[in-house]
Image 1 (tube, rainbow, N blue to C red):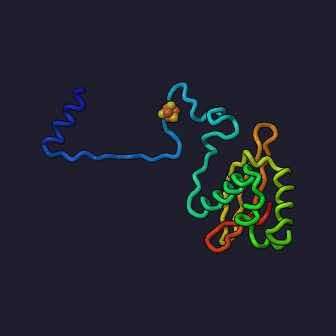
Image 2 (cartoon, rainbow, N blue to C red):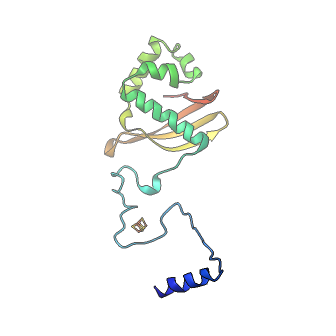
Image 3 (spheres, helix red, strand yellow):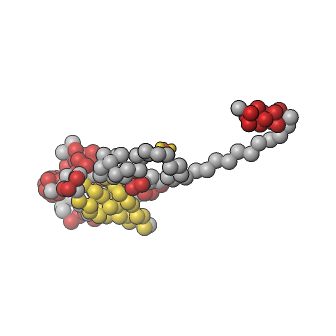
Length: 159
Ligand code: SF4
């Protein structure tokens, strides 16, 4: 309390205090019993240190993968074919029609898309790579998804 009164006294007599703000990615304190960075704090599949903040194009790439998860959760192969797949991939599977929907259906059946988690994104010009974890616990697998930019949108080039 004495320190506060002393500081007020100096401020009221014209002293301008300096304010220092330290921004850290990880909490620099070491409180006893802190569990923020523990293995189970986020449910066991990811720790706080592994959480990444995607920005800019990386965010856009991650968003496309999240859109894939959302459409897959709705079992909406039509939406995936119409809006999320790159032209190069559509060309390989015969366009965005019935053939695409069948191919996407097979891919979705083989992947647990309910728990897709983008772990990292690398952008190189109009190409990008996303490391995506699917599934949980012992059945979790990580795969690499290639994306390509078409206009202002990132599209999935491999499934
Ligand atoms: S409890 Fe953990 S996260 Fe919270 S301030 Fe303390 S060390 Fe930092």
